[in-house]
Amino acid sequence: MNIGIYDPYLDTMGGGEKYMLTAASCLSKNNNVSIFWEQKSVQEIKKIANSRFGFDLSSIRFTKNIFSKNISFLERHTQLRKYDAIFYLSDGSIPLLLSRKLVLHFQFPVNWVCASLLTRTKFASIKNVVCNSYYTKKYIDKTFSTKSIVVYPPANDYEFKKIPKKNIILTVGRFNPMPGGGNFKKLDVMITIFKEMIDTGAKNWELYVVASFKKQEEGEIAKLEETVENYPIFIMKNIPYEKLNDFYLRSKIYWHGAGYGEDLENHPERAEHFGIATVEAMKNGAVPVVISAGGQPEIVKEGVNGFLWNTKEELIRKTIHLIENPKILEKISQNSRLISNTFSMEKFCSEINSVFK
Image (cartoon, rainbow, N blue to C red; front, side, top):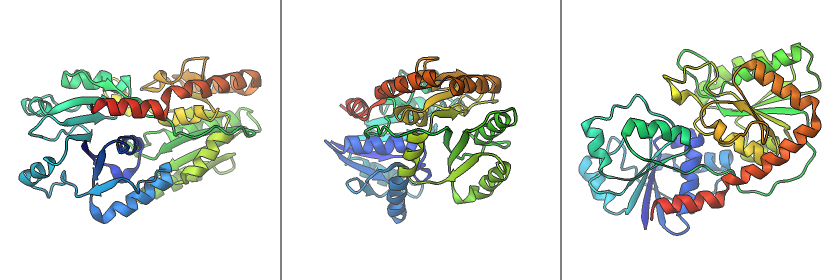
């Protein structure tokens, strides 16, 4: 089968891009897979994918971006005849195809999209709609009056290394500026809360903030760095995959706060849509203490493989509980590693291949 893949945000290398590239890798084992992208930047894409995610894309074919605005409708559909299926990451936009070969993927709710007559016409060319979580599915199904399927993203496939952990709390995220200030992953909020813990007596613990960002966001990162002076807080900037994995291995606790303080009823897209970094942390034995919003409750079961919180007071209290009870921390760490196997690469590849059968 010839499968074409398109992700309009491939150069940002966030969670959606990791999902689509992982799917490309899985599908390429038994199919001819092509990724549509601008040829002049393909080598840079491959380089970033390798550094950020550890992906080797040498066996994946990149071809002319037929979804570019510079491509005519006629040329696009002439080229599309070469493919048996198209896997398309949507930000709410839906391409018009003349045959039923489109598999649409959503990473987040798109409540701002109106299900117009044109949209319903476009849906006639859709074979399947795939979501990354039941949280996303709930909103996508309502917006488009459809029945999507859920294929969870996988944790990276590597063997757990038993090495001594340190008194480290870790938070990981791409720095996405929010309308009105702040950032999507709430990295600044995590810093503020940890500083409050230190100011009220917490000792011998460190916070590591692993942030990925674009060049134009360097100024915002510099402002974050100014806020951590004289605190045991370290901001790690655009670090390679191997170093990130080392932080997962050495950290005892993982924090996540996307959606905190947001109006999620009107803006559900501002919560974490799934939370693959939480799964990666669990796989390495870091106990997640994450906000009870978005897709996070699909990953973390309270008191079993981590803890959920709604207020900063809850986050502090549950973190201190783990710090003061190392046996509980160790038990939940073991559970975290076991439950993370639910999100295996083997399972993902099997399910994503089934979508195209």
